[in-house]
Image 1 (cartoon, rainbow, N blue to C red):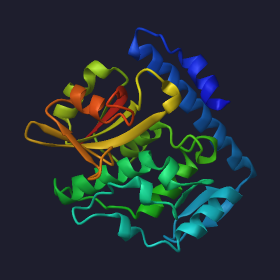
Image 2 (cartoon, one colour):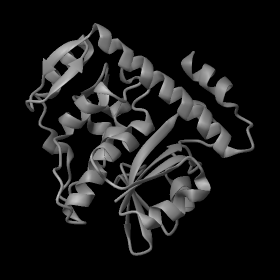
Image 3 (cartoon, rainbow, N blue to C red):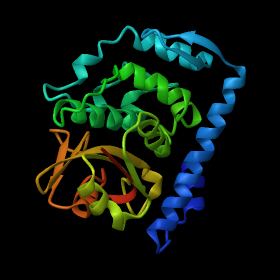
Image 4 (cartoon, one colour):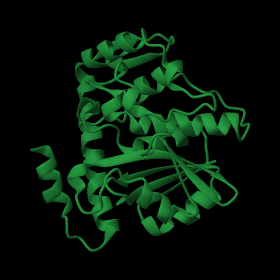
Length: 249
């Protein structure tokens, strides 16, 4: 029912991608705001990392479950998480990260790239800490719709990174070029929004862009420009379409 409603609201035949993107992101923003309201019925819960978050009972179960998981098994020798589908034992809200964790994974991969490859003097948080933080402010429908992409932008701004943001696909190349690392959200199928979205970290090496946690056995997809990369990262026949991009430095 929710997917049919999303298809109706977004409008399958819209000729302007920017308009469809704005509609989608407004829906995400509404769901994120509604999830925050549940804090009124929440309590303080001290998580495994010593931080104190306002959490509902859902988040308490999430954090207690995740504290027992060895997250290092999901991180490859280069510091990236490439295979989201394996993460069935980690929870984000009510659901496993294999289902709804792409925004959190993209955030982790971006931070890891900045620390390990760009040698920035930053703290790389434990993946479970990011899960807790995004559930506290970012989760949509207790995680059923993943994380509001704007929450990623807000997270990096809050942590004093330089951030560029656009909901216009024509801006993707410019922002990716001017940033040290990017996070992009795309429709998996430009012709069917019911196939939902995917969020990926994009790194660059000279003039080549690489998306992490992407379709394919390796979990990586590369291209010479962002338009081609977006298209290749769609999970249904290379029909990806850009929604928004966050450039981070």
